[in-house]
Image 1 (tube, rainbow, N blue to C red):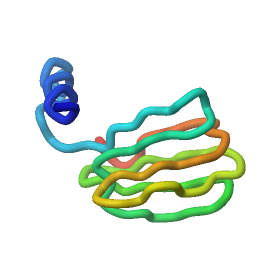
Image 2: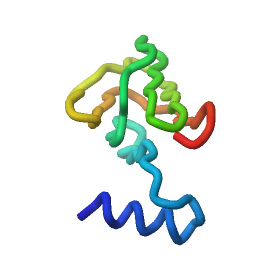
Image 3: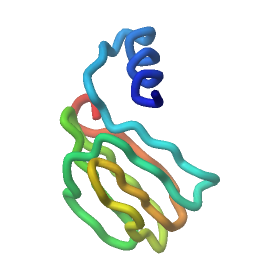
Image 4: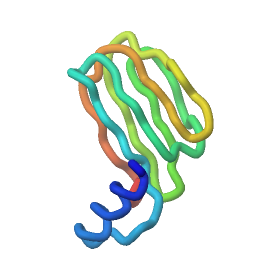
Length: 89
């Protein structure tokens, strides 16, 4: 149901229905990412997640991985920024 809603938003914004990394940051203290293909890099200050169309760079402090299963990733720590790289993530 959530994926259908996100696809609908993508279509309204002209992004089609291609799968991208979707994410939610919760008060800067953590984030939840969907549609992750793999983990490209990981440190306490930066995590890079690869999607089918680009990647997402998470910068912060005391970063760690929570759940990492079936395309879903939970990042814990102080999230300072999230940026898309290399096309549409």
